[in-house]
Amino acid sequence: AIAAERLDYDACGARTVAEAVAKRRPADVDVLADALAQTWPLNPVSALLLGPISRARFAQNERSVFGFLSSAEPAGFRQFLETTDFEGGTYNPAMLWDYLAANFGMALTAGVDGDRFSLAFEAIERAGVKGTGLHVALTKAAAIIEFFRNGSGVVLADDFLSASVLGFGMKAISGAIKDLVDWAILIRQPRLGGY
Image (cartoon, rainbow, N blue to C red; front, side):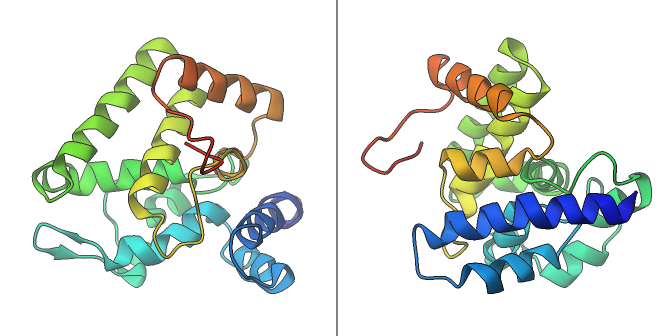
C-alpha cells in the first residue's frame, strides 16, 4: 500500500508542484519533481515551505528543518509518522499550520506579524463555521503560503492550493475555493493570478 501511495504522490503531487514553480521562476521541472518526490511523505508544498519557516524566528525560538523533522512536538512530522497509516495522505500545509499554531501560537500573534496571524486565525475559524474540513484545510494552506512564500517558489494560487489538499477531487477543491472567495476569506488578486 505504501508503494502505491508513493507512486501516486510522485505522479501527481511532486510533478504538479514542480510545474507550478517552473511557471513562475526558472526551474528544471524533472530535477525539482524528483527532489520533491524524495521528501515523501511530506506534501510537496509543505516541503517547499520548510526552508522559509526554518529561517523565521518565533519569539526566542529558531526553527531548523532537522528540528522539525525529528522533534516530538505536538502536531509535528514525527507524530504524523507515528500515527498515520499513509492512506490518509501526506503531511500537508494545513498540518504544518497546525504544528506552528500548537507550538508557537502566542508567539505568532505577539510578533511583528501578530495582526496578520490574528486575521489568519480568524479566517480559519470562519471557514470552519461556514464550511467543511476541505474549506478549513484550504484556508490553513492559504495562510501558511501567505506567510512563508518568500524564497519558497510557492505562491497563493489555485495550483498550489490544489496540491496542498491532495486526495480531494478538483471539482470539490474548485467549489471550496469559490466558497472561500464568496465568503471573503480569500480575496482574488487577478493581477497576480492568485489570492
